[in-house]
Length: 319
Image (tube, rainbow, N blue to C red):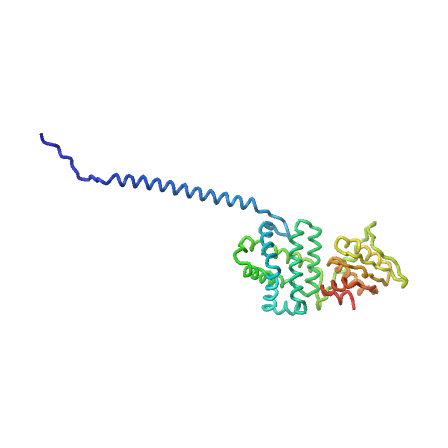
């Protein structure tokens, strides 16, 4: 019997290997696809978590990422004013116009003042009254030192560069973007107080309209007694801050409406902020234009130091 021969043409004895390989590739592809899906899912969850962690606050006319703001502030605090000192040095070395206006100031005190200003804005971000007071203080300080609107963008750019150089990778893009918005909003708020005021030879010419409001009844609480010299006396409080500004303003209005000469007793002042000093500047500006004579009674060392620090000595005629 003749055995029938099977044709071997086209037969591949290792074909089963390819089959296993194909199955293996399919398994690997499926595994890779699942891995990619997991990776995408993880990224989506992470993004969702990041969005959930992000808190947006309306601050300085901007929608600010509060989380990034606070992270940046914590990093700045660790430098112990080092970044600010570097910023001041860089500004002075590259921008002579700004240096001329501030070169008579102690750089360490400048750094401390800037650091305290930023701190007050960050810490008071949810308290509009305190925030307004801090902004007013900054506006008075910057204006009295002859800082112009165009200077703020210069300082912001130099400040951010100093931060990146000093802090490094910890200062992320998100933090940098948030602080750029924060500083831009801060500059705009400070400059907004400049719009009705003129800077001449580092002296402030405040708009006299601040002195023309009607006195509200029941708010005249400060001492406006008359001393032996016969002039009414405006007695400043030991703590003269923004919480007492409206009362101070009303007392000023009462005095200027009825008198040609007044005295201001600043002997008890232990602390005074920019809001009170701004009102006093407005009073002296009004006095110059309306022939009102103002005399000082024993201004305290604290008061004189505050006036000198803000560059208001000439405006307030303190000797």
